[in-house]
Length: 380
Image (cartoon, helix red, strand yellow):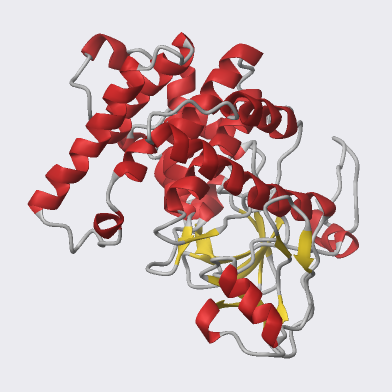
């Protein structure tokens, strides 16, 4: 699977992912071959590019849940754009409450992990896609942390609105990379985050719970609104969830300018106590999305490569790994193994869905053996 910019698409290329319109109707199915008309349509949609399959590459399998997640993302980005554009102009958005309610109903009640599929972003649509993904993560994490329905709704509403400050920044300034930004640019950018903070503070239509989350979260994420030592000492679950979801999405987002941080590196960053993220919120994230699941190929710190065959039970970064070099299974949670061997990173791929034959995995995953029971074959 490779990414091709919209102006470099050629007739006959095969789509790796379906394309939907803003109503969620599929316009082009996976494995469809591009026509001249199709290329024009894709360019008219405003897409910066699409994923295509390489000539001999088979269509990667997708579960019904993965397909629905991508379809929902497409529809929701159009909806959230309308909401955020209105709010940024200080106009009321009648659709905000309905949007949040539907998102919470769909993803805030899940009792299992999902494949959190990142979407490719341009400067123009970054805020919309980032706000959507942050809201999705917040909904799932709130469920894991057993927040009340009211608190979960307030949190997701705050997540939808939290990055309005970036949307206020002129597009020319947003297009600059970190290295290109001058001291004057940084001061100017800060004024837009301050403006967003003040806008929410004066918005009497916002629920008090939403305003509280935004007030504290914007202080801690964007360093605006002055310092409130008493408030910042408190561990407010909604704020900790929003901060964690915000940075995770920011680190792992895909864009043309730079390579994203892998899930493994992002989780390692969040688990590092020195970076200041709440461990309970980070664990809620880990229990919401699939990370280092069976079928994921990894690089090990000794230079070997391997395959995850059993997830880490107590530490997501310490699964059972089948080494490609010696065909041995290593339990990375065992102290003497962990002292010498850890996961360095996942092997890079454009597609984070992993498919593994369950029957084959059983050959390596072992079986329960009771105390006093003898087995000729050591598969436990």
